[in-house]
View 1 (tube, rainbow, N blue to C red):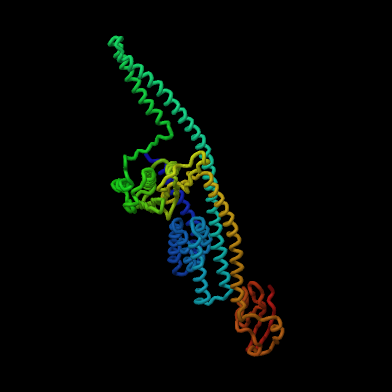
View 2: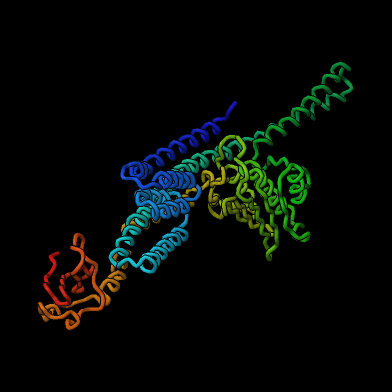
Length: 527
């Protein structure tokens, strides 16, 4: 029978495939329309097929490699201008799906550098065209990526708020459970002491009757049976009451099993486990050795369940008066084994076990896998008592990874979840400021870069313009060595354009038209 987890995973996969198909269809519409609309060159069909295949490749890799998909779309825009509609979409998805900013900054920087070299160096386009292309990259690439990044931070904030609410509710229920367990243990102790004492007295009196000479043999036999029954009842009472006592553990480890034997047993079961420890470091005090065994066993159990096939490294080393224990598993090579969802209770119990030795436990995702680290003192001072204040709640960064991703961090205590919630809110505020402030700042920087390029050798100030006389030969006018780019719709041939240096775009200001090498007319261009 198919588990609910597998059904949900399959449903999620189907939804993603449908979403990718709809995305491809929406982005392919302008490309396909331009490819089938006449006039069509002979190579239009081949270019259309290649463009649609490239777009399909970008959509297919967009979830796993969002920046690679963005680069594919930018590359496609060099051959088909209709890819420009896909650039903002894939930039947004890269910001929403990608985790880091360094790679995205590197990709956008590489695109900007390559585009600048291609346009200004090889193609010889003017500064105005370069500025337009750079603006497209800024507002069609960087700005959507920042919006996607902000959306990702919002989702992280919502998840942190849910974890915080769960942690508060769990702590409240745990406090009630602790009170209940303490009361049960107190009652169990009282029952054990009082009933055990009474049953012992009954057994003693039955034994006295068993040896009494003035009783009939049948009565002495009955007294013997009563004594045996009371002794058995006392033993059963001891066993039952012991289950309710806090001091009674539930560790089912084989007697005197070491960490080395535990690792060898995991290898025999088919796991890939490497133990890195010096023989002297494995000689630990009994309580510390028991805690280390518990940490390794729990980590190996969870690695086998949530990261099957992934190699696991167990490292144990002494550092002064402490023992540093690490259990790290690589990213999973296969989906997690079917089973109920993780709630972090194993890590909570493990943290408590480590706390009893005076140590500290850290656990969380690492490089796609999961890492558990315990620092145990060699001379354990025991757990923190009630006289020393309340015992701090466990500080577990997250649940075990599921399908290569961090699982639900339901083991976070309220204090830790509050810190994570504050961090998530701060990241959302920062990402919002960056999403709107960065494009403005970059636009200003872009204008400051563009202005010197547009005005270099192309500025004709007003006094210089006023000195020009119609009919003078061009060589005698002393014009700037470079012209400004003509405005849109300017007549072709016979006229030159210069700017007065207006900021920030250095738009053309003067139109000078020549005939037979002489100035035929001059005029100011209305902006």
